[in-house]
Length: 393
Image 1 (cartoon, rainbow, N blue to C red):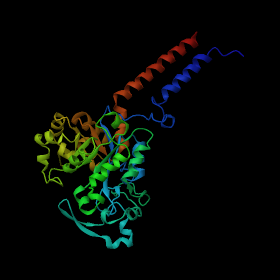
Image 2: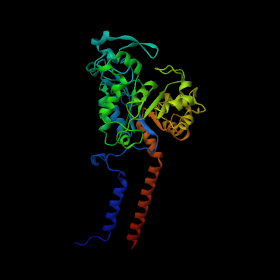
Image 3: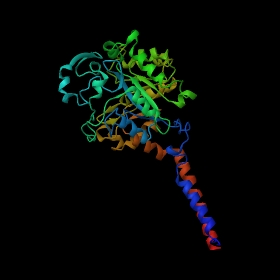
Image 4: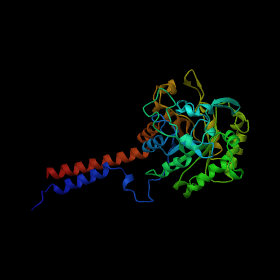
């Protein structure tokens, strides 16, 4: 049977259009073993702060899985310990705010008062519960103005479970664990052989193959940043792993928890010159980079410029979409805030509660996306002209 004279070009057109409409990399379900889409390193890192916790309760498996779906480069977590020495992903040293501990009458006698970073705190502490007991609790949303539908549905996860979420992702996703409150943890939890919290932390990373200096072949295969507010912990683990480390910096009124150094001391050029022997960058609270008054951002400090002069990356925290966290300069628009920090301040990574928003902004404004879209449009235009010419003949 004879083919229609317009069959060939039309089939060609459909094939080309189909190819152009598809992503320019293999879909995760079609990628061969060992060829997952690599970590992007051409733009500031999208760091999912406690997972996608603007949507789902923080540091739960679904919060991390959602962050990966939404395009996170790294999923961030805080590491603490149970009474029996199991490392967990959990932010607060107490369970009161983000779990249903108060509903568990069997634990009513566990309330304690301990000194934490120079202040006395009363509550139910993770270090007074075994991992089995912690697993019996359910996590809830920290902020009342966020979605409450997931309260009571998810458990606390361990450090190892958190790592497996990243390793099971359909593309390469980095981890960004914090050595959280190491002074407190080492005081209240003891491991066999005199091991410290930091030792167990690094042992866990090594168990799952995390190693390599920044941008090395090993690191790119399994990316990880180790973060902490405690400089002595970062220096200590530097003797155990060459994974890149980020020195977290608190607000200007807070001294370091382990060395009692002031903000001004740890952000001085002399200290940057010293600490850069051990760390890849700093993670400052964003209001110390750009001061705020009456809900307006003021003139930026020179913190980023000075850090960059010492070859230190800058990953500020924490970016949130809600109006109460968006300063008036940005007109209640998180995209304007991202644009300001990425293009005017020039940061190297961003801790965000809303991974999807940051990913959307970066995808829509990235040069590579624009180039790809432009090339596809030009190709389709040329094909349309050819088909129109063929049909007129």
